[in-house]
Length: 99
Image (cartoon, rainbow, N blue to C red; front, side, top):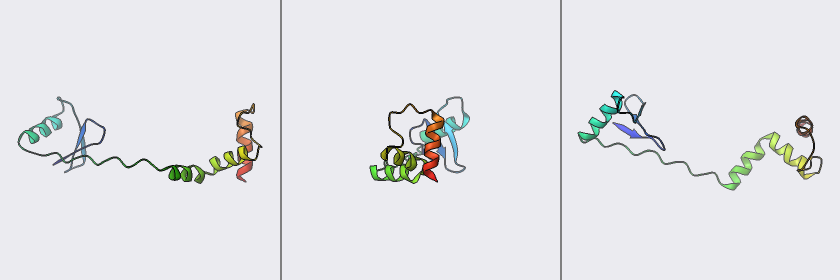
């Protein structure tokens, strides 16, 4: 038996989990087409997971201590959004906020 793969031109052979590309020179692809011709039905691909909600993205962002420190520094004014600071200076300010 075979299963389609989401967003690819491949199928997975379920017996050994081999991914088989759509390639007429690939013997596994040829065997797959023969199996289909003989009545085999390919299992549908899994559906894509739903995109994260805004709350999930925000929680993920703020779970990162660097992200939180950067936002805190912008909010309290110690790191203006439009800044002439060098990358090293920005990193130093963020690092200081994390301590």
